[in-house]
Amino acid sequence: MKYLKYISLCLILFLAACGGYPIETNMSQDVADFNFTTQDNERLSLKDLEGEWWIADFIFTNCTTVCLPMTYNMSQLQSKLKKEDLDVKLVSFSIDPDYDSPEILKQYGESYNADFTSWSFLTGYDFDTIKEFSIKSFKNLVAEPQPGSDQVIHATFFFLVSPEGEVIKNYSGVDASEIDVIVSDLKELN
Image 1: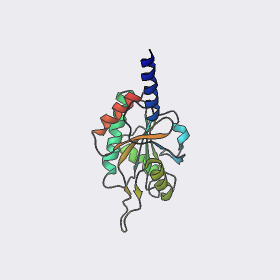
Image 2: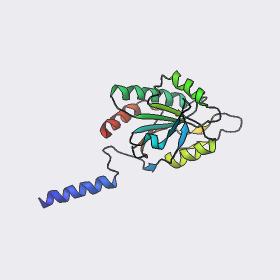
Image 3: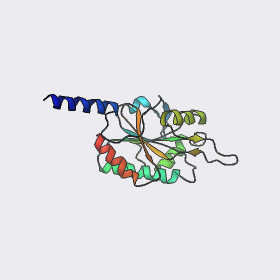
Image 4: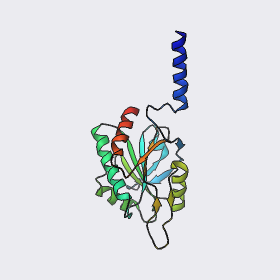
């Protein structure tokens, strides 16, 4: 009996040290408080997402490279989450807020068949704000376009955020095979 208590105590301490998640994690970063504008000209804040698992990414609508597969993959993820009856929010932060108005984001989301009841596209801040937010909260590179270009430089991750607002894992947003990994992780967590 003593041996069993010792094993139980070790397991509890191990899980507490690892964040207690039943999946392998590769991040532990708190999301800074935010309150931004959605594609429907409404507000979405970190507090609104409290108690929910959510997936975040950073894109912009006039991107000519990586945002295309990222947004397509997010759309595929939304479909799979619905099929699996997983209630998970998706949040795409625009990193070109000067161009990406709520109306443009709405058209962009519609072009990927986004269900806006669970997928929000955010804007309503300046570039420096989203750059700092992306780097500090997600350890996600965002940089100004090169001279003569309108293409913002950014990393291509999807981020899994806990109901407490902690980023616990990142995935490749351009690799379609990661969609199944995300769904599998979310099944373990729900």
